[in-house]
Image (tube, rainbow, N blue to C red; front, side, top):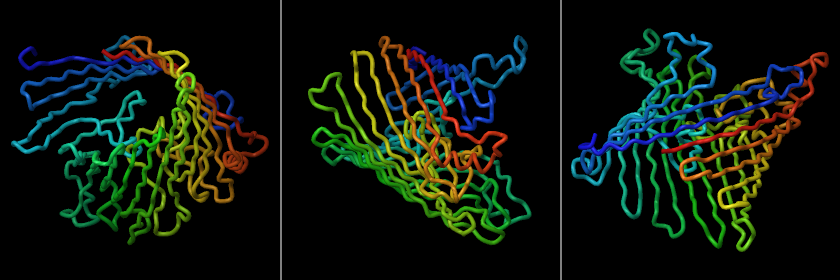
Length: 429
């Protein structure tokens, strides 16, 4: 290790969470509340055996307190909670060119992480098995990557289509460029391809072939900081009958502004945001118009309660933040959520639409509700940070309409607001 210049570091994190009325329905008494402790431990080793060579390995243990009791406490049964989070090799000036090669299990993080992120809030986080080439100079950074999401080792849909033309893997490819030459601004442009051949029907070689093109501008002017991002999706997906593929036609955008008031006490900052993602107005036609959010870090994007993803949505936010003391930051957020298309579902931060409150109902209201978040960040010392939050999601008329259609009065169709709170402590070394 001394010869290889190995450095070790790591993280210990513990979060206690409690959530009430997770299905928004008052008829489910006691069955929709969750409380747990989530623990994550990471140990990282970074070796630099030569000036242009880096090897990084991060071992991660992720568990919920008490889960060993469900798989054989005090026995040799392994619960499968120990894993490799990162394991990659990076070579700079690859073959003498101004390009770096990074290959292995790694995090991919770009822009505001609305489409590609490491999802660090999760107890597991996200990583990719990927190969990435990186070019950088004073004017621009350019990354080109290919990631293997699911490998089926050449197993094809035998007997359905020509075997030589079938690829049953799931792959994710991208080119992401950041232009740094604009004064006080950075401009990102990207092209992404998500290809899924794992469950191709008789009619096709693919299940999904989704192309995403977009741009993101971030900067500051006259004391105002801002971010604006737009993404357009095209491509094809299977599932529109025996002989046809659906055409993908979707888009999304996000606009965010903030202003730190000069001379205001406690460094007072105010902000606002508007987010939109298209939905599908007709599930029976041959167009898919629901935006696919790919692999985001969504927890801090559309309310901290994770009830909204970047799919079929219209949302606006106002927020205020301050530092009452040097080590403590406080933030208050208000969110309002509605559907872009009431003929489509209501999708959560994971991009899913589980439960009665999220079902498709073209006759129901598009107003899904609002959320209030209070978040505190306290820097205990240079190694330890404490974060806490309390939130409430107020069920809107769209949730109430769906519950009334699903449940009879005897079952109780009244909607309940959802509550959530957490306390988290993190130590980095």
